[in-house]
Length: 301
Length: 317
Image 1: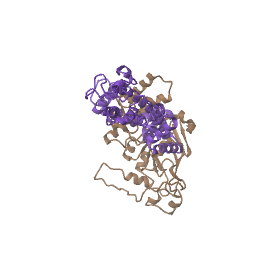
Image 2 (image 1 turned 90 degrees about the horizontal axis):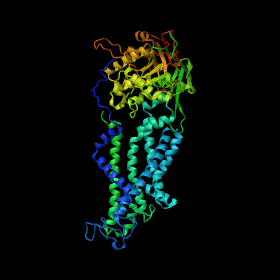
Image 3 (image 1 turned 180 degrees about the vertical axis):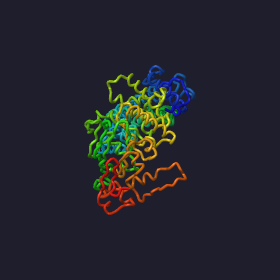
Image 4 (image 1 turned 45 degrees about the horizontal axis):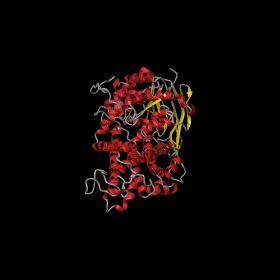
């Protein structure tokens, strides 16, 4: 037999582990690495907020209401980022707010993605009528402006952070369904699926072992992006008074409370907004890097 | 001659296509009334232009789809849909495009051992791996390829992997759906030689689907020439190549490129297009394009006539 064909540079290096390989490709994207570090910092803050924060986020220092940050005239090291109209320490509230945002992000993405992937797979493999039924239902959900639909759902369920998360998850789900179904249909026509069929793979195996892993790249990007969408939407609902209720130090709710001081005390509005911006941006950057690293077609041999 | 490993009789597959919401569904006769027998160690080549039902045949023989009518017997057992699961190991397939036929998310080792994992759940993981490594060597790849992903391989190497995967279950029949037409000519010959080696070693029966007659000449024992879902000429390689009886087979053979550029070529150019498979012509399907057509051809469909070398033509050469 012709070994000339299978011949290549002899390399005796052991194959790097999966994680190292992943890191190798992820590292190539500078923005993604930056996003990852920021994200890691936020996760750290979210977990250890009560230990890092100088004060309890609900304690009111009435004597120091609306004190500016330390670098501005009238600020002091006692309240590094200033205080809000009720005299609560901004830094402590922002740090604790990270907890809520990540809680929202993780729960919403998990619920929306797992439900969406399952329904999408089902639609891709289902007979035509069931597929059409599922997709039209998703189209109906998508036809509503997402925030409006979330608002309606929260109005029905009652305003609370949990209900806001449920509403956001329902609103985000159709994106996963469509994405999964589209990639499933694309993959189903390929020969490797047929050959798995010829090898006798059952429906479950085809769905979850053969096809699903090949559809994951766009879903992971979508998950990362909708993590930030979830945070944004939760903040928006909070801002509208339909999400987390005061005195919860949720970023959107903080924005809403501080609205009237926009001209007098810039820090009460700018800082929560900045926190949302940085988090969302970091997650989006990371999502792009994840996609590149997960796609074997972008790897070099 | 040894007992046949696969016998097809009257294999037919129709598809119904619906064009509009209110139009009546129409029938595409992808494959009509095909008979063949596969013997161990022999290669049956199916040739014909695109759209003649070659790939449909592959789908029926590999039990991806049930035939509309007709019967397929594998190793003496009828292959009806309720027994497919038991017969999976008997027939495997190698596809044309080696880039689409390997799961890009699986390492070569996983790809090779998947058929065993599905069909022999009792087998130990270590045994599966040993078998996969053995197969890697059998198809001319190297042990270190075991842990690599498909995208790290060239087309020829991928096709070797695809052949290896098909052989993991020790099939009696291998359906080769244009296995070399996506490869470079230099690699084509390497893969064909590999296939011939394997056939000799494992006593495999090949159903070799191709439109490339020079490849068929190299590998086939028997030939079926198909046109519009029907067999129009069958016979041994020598018979068909030396003396094609059906005008279509003759035209097809005349279209093979020749190595001698100065040599005389009697290329027969066919007029017209392949008729739509939707139309069920009463006469010979080739009649509209044939230069020998007479009234009888348009009204009566010729059956396959002859003893070993058969052709479906009223006026064979």
